[in-house]
Length: 116
Image (cartoon, rainbow, N blue to C red; front, side, top):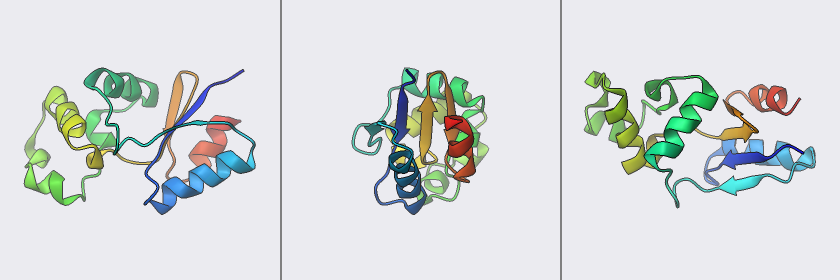
């Protein structure tokens, strides 16, 4: 049996849409409200591996905090990961993880494909 986890922000419509999709498909997903309980550096590194993407690709580059921290000019992957740990608002959402694969639920078709 597969394990499904969603990194969820209840205030985000895309995140709520993914939650609804999981419920409609009868998926009993583990819900991680990552803004309340930010991931560790190790958890983010694992997630990036599951997503097969770089730290920058996972970042919400239009957030004010992204600009305030001057992250546009940062090339160091470790520093970008540390910025997301310290400021989880920078993490793109929602993220759905099934077994060892993960997708960002934008567009929602990514989640549909992951669930199979």
